[in-house]
Image (cartoon, rainbow, N blue to C red; front, side, top):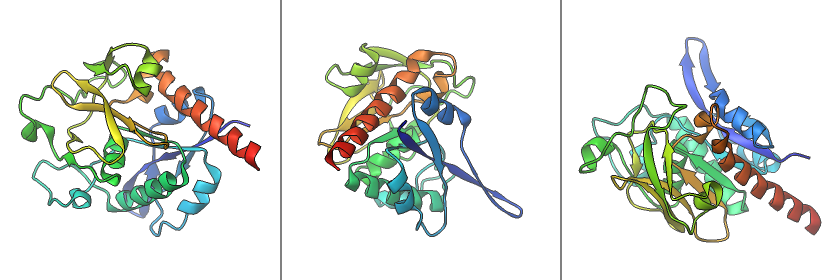
Length: 245
């Protein structure tokens, strides 16, 4: 049986309610990576979280709007983008419960920032005014193409995945990790020093990237590798649990 991977989503207010939505690039990347994708909706009370944690073998925290800075003790600055309080609430609770249960976690863009905050770190609300000499990180032209270089440390999951020290990635963010969360280590940076990837230092599987491999995977199979690596880890844990039963 294929591993089941949960995908978080964003929401949009409509005249007669709201819409849960997710770019199909995430769904396709998980499916092509060898797993069955399911979307975890944003329900107001959060009571569904435990139900989904009984189903999934891993969770991808996807990209989207900004996380409320109230989660790391700051008021918003003028440059803060759109926030979704319900999504923040659900994803923070989902991360904490999944982390406690040892369910593998893969964070992409906003997902990287959220997991860092959930583990006690914080982020720059806007790198363009808060990071000296920062370069471009918000390419709106074609998210399927590379935009800048990241530098990958050899002793890392990301190096195991791509087998290279430098990688050209896409980029669509105006926030980034500032203070690193607990039990995490930095495994990649851009040339201007912005953190581009982290992973766990304990026995939990947590991987986070600031770029969007799911979008680049539309044109470049190389960027399916992070999903295949993550899914293989989920499958191995699933098999080990079955053997223990």
